[in-house]
Length: 262
Image 1 (spheres, rainbow, N blue to C red):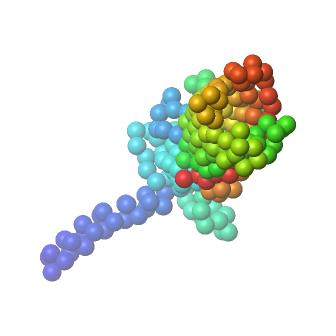
Image 2 (spheres, rainbow, N blue to C red; image 1 turned 135 degrees about the vertical axis):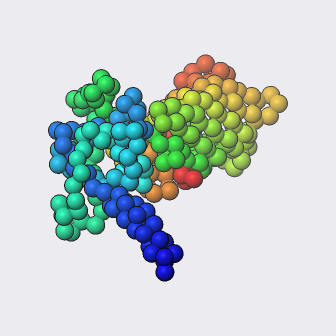
Image 3 (cartoon, one colour; image 1 turned 120 degrees about the vertical axis):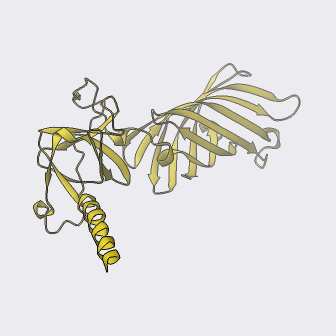
């Protein structure tokens, strides 16, 4: 019996604090509380919480409260919060969803965090897992739209928006056997989320075309493009502004792409 009472006592001592903390709710006490991607005062500010908003805190460590927003762990300074209880929540709400309002873009008024850094709208930051895509494309000049190259493409972006693009293509010579050959393009890329699911990106590529021993060419292309991300499917298209070493001229064409976010 003593062993049973001992085990029950230990269980109650451990279980209830854990359970009560697992359901800890905190209210924002300041006008605006900065939300960061790391528990550091120098970390990137990805949004703000309004006064009186309530969040469900999963952990508090070294002065930072952690909570989950859209599947990602975010942090707010615990000095901007006070404990509250679930009775303050809307009866129709089953999950606490902080608004992270005040989306900031280059075209809107800039706000500053307490350490002087710009508050950045998280939707304007390229997440490599959200916007990298690989697939197929077709590139051709407007004057010879049926004599372009089909290819395999890949676009990889970093969290800052910078990345690179790769394109390996071929022309089977169906329209004109003289145009048959293979092409290779690679270069830096920059992308920006306009507003989900729309984004723009700008590859600057070095091009090499091989269509036989006596028919080789190289040049550069600038491809301003607009993309639409529909879950895992990515549709995009834009201009293909290229300079060719053989012609020493600039030609304008188009590029259409169909890809998947892996």
